[in-house]
Length: 330
Figure 1: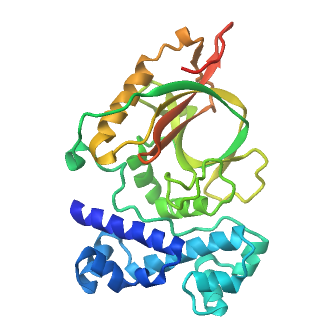
Figure 2: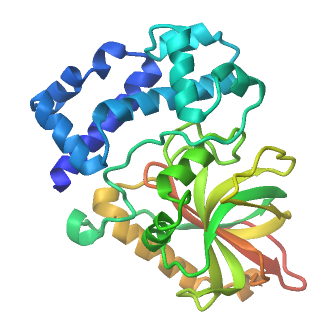
Figure 3: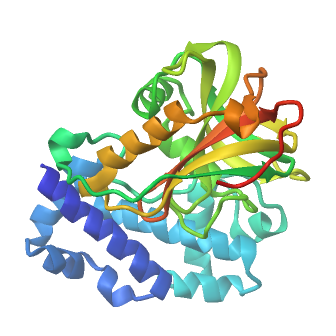
């Protein structure tokens, strides 16, 4: 099964590449099946088994997700956008857009609001696999430790006080109507102006979505002995005035100082477990007092967690300065 998941992952990566390059000829079932070396019917069946949806439905949803961002962010005509993303006419595009998002594209352009986008499918969810499935080699670069001051901003998020890690978090949310992974990530993906957005369209990897842990006396006791609430959300500018979906919360985060434990890009299949262990060891062994600070356990303070093997693996932990302490970079 894992080999097929890798192949399906290559398909969804290829789909996004073709949509960005507007290469419609490569976006046919025939072309994608040929890439895998299997028949169209077999590819369709395996895609459905792994993803839970038909390939053509996934294609349509991803085209619309890319088109929506063009409607929101560009000044292109709706007809040009429709044709660029594979629709036969502006009318066909409008019908599909309205069906998917409940509003025609012209109205959405005038008044953007959070909607549920079809985020990029991730058959290989890197959070779900352990070393038994993937394997590991013992090479790893060092962990960089440094201080940063993060300006005031807002955090739009979903929370769970009882969950224990990413997998448990989304299992619990799946049991609550409107709070499943696809719905929440689709809503967050549609919001413009995310501070961590690098232009991608996949959760926690380019679209600005991250995990956070909020100091919370009523939250679950974590491995560090700190009561916390797990959150999934996006950082937004302090003057964000857009909509807040009913299942999400919006909090003001004041300017604050943080210590960052960061590892650069790494090979997930070979190095993930090693990098995770190195980060954990660096955090456990860090001499806060010697650095003139202490971990800030004030209720409400957030710790951010960034995970993208192609870019970085890092924890951003809030600190407060000891009297006479000075900030610096190590």
